[in-house]
Length: 384
Image: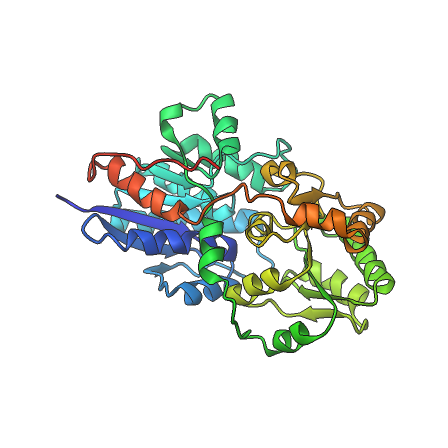
């Protein structure tokens, strides 16, 4: 039985957190797969945090990130770099993840070499090409050239079917972010960022916040931050912990607007393991993130989503996430109601997790073994 060469391509911290469990699972079967990890370095410092956490050393690091990089620069550089890596390795399949520029470039480079593509987290849709931008269009373009569409939930599968994709090319896996979060959270945990150890010990409620989306930089982000300051001022037992994204556009707004408050703690970006364990110990989450919509449901922590659209409607329908938009009053009102109304809070906190059961990576590896004829049966898909 000839083993198959699988090239796993990613470049950002969110991709790494969701792809590392897949790499670990593929490497559990050395008799089936030779697994090579190629990273673009779309994120540099932040990318290496989850790699270190999961014990993954890239086989190839293109190290493409530069200060104030544009989408055009990164896309062109990544396609050229990945083209060379693929030409040298000649894999049997290339796996990409989600909706990043790296995923788009990896899938296109694979297509240029006529190598099958497996798209993990396929089929998510906001149905608005400008939000999230450019991710909504990236994901659609990746799906077009994909041979195996690994949809995390039935919602993703239905989106793909409605767009005309062959049902036989779609397989529902569950969300690998759930795998990663379950593996990472610990009941007894010492934070690597020592300030978090001190903050967690304070009495009162912890509200964890993130904000970084490109389309929110500017007026929407200023509205978010005004809502956050009001929320803390009006709730003396609340502390906000905000690991501030490295984006200059975000930092130029965040520090002037949120610094100087004794219960708003602005931190440098924190390690993945710290973030997961912070989420599990928080009372409430406010964020404009895509991935946090999946991670917070693992720990049954209500999330106020500071965005106008979501490509993960399952969490909103399950009442685990509230889509608040980016207006100050809307964000303040829903967050305040969750802090003040215990019954409403518990209703959200008891919502089911629609995204996964911790076995998505295992399903992907077993599916690929069947795809290449290494085993006779497909694994049972995730039913949610």
